[in-house]
Image (tube, rainbow, N blue to C red):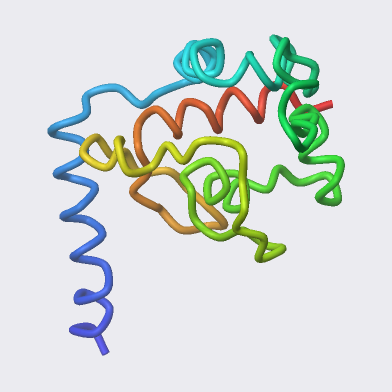
Length: 138
C-alpha cells in the first residue's frame, strides 16, 4: 500500500520541485492583466465584457468574461476556461473558434496550478490570466 502511495505522490512531488527550481515566482493577477491587455482587449474589451473594438467585426460575439462564475453556478470554471484559452476541447464539444489558441507557443514555461483539486502543469501566462479572470468576476 505504501509503495502505491509513494508511486503516485513521488512523480507529482518531483514535478513540483523541478517547477519550483526553474520558475521562481508564481504568476498573479497583474501578470494576467498584462497578458489580457496585450492579447484579449481587442475583442473582450478592457473590462472583459465582450465590448472591445473588434467585437462587432468578428462573426461570433465575444463572451462577457465577467460572468463566467455566474454562468457556472457561482464557481469560477477554471478547467473550462483553461481548456478554451489553451485551445483544447471544452464542455460543449464545439471546436470551431475565432479566438486564437495560445497553448502551443507556451508549453515550455509551466507552473503548477490547482484545477479542480489537481495540481496541473499550466503555461505561466495562462496561470496569470486565470488569476486575472477570477478577479473580474461579478
